[in-house]
Amino acid sequence: MKKAKITAYVDAALFNELDELSVRRRIPRTQIIEAALASFLSPDSAEQNEAAIVRRLDRLTRSLERLERDQEITTEALALFVRFWLTTTPPLPDDTYSAAKAKGKERYSGFVRTLSRRLSTSTTLQRELSHNTEANPNK
Figure (cartoon, rainbow, N blue to C red):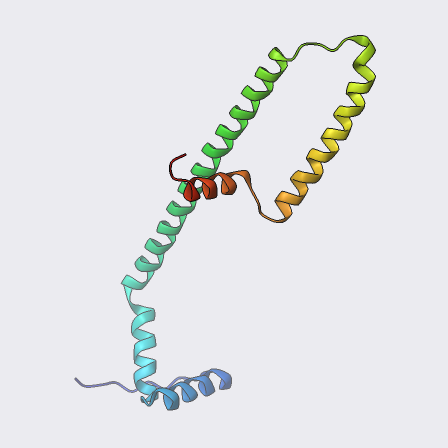
């Protein structure tokens, strides 16, 4: 195949990178430039990039949909628990209200400390449950 000569000016740093790559790979600079031009001018390159981006966006969309579903399940479970707890817990007598309120504050503080500790160490109930299930498959 007959080749045409091209004269082009490039930045000195780019030329040095081209020269170093040519020496390192032991191939002529012309071959590197031809491959780079072919890749740049190839219509498939743009289509491949677009397809890769579309695949990534699809994967992100599915991931966000799973997160949204999981969050909806969690919110519904919490709401059902609170409703059940509120309907089954009898009201406190007036004479024990102050002591119960103080105990409630104490328990809530303990809950917040435990939650903070578990979140900071990445120890989640879901991981605990899956670990226990793996350790005891009969459960």
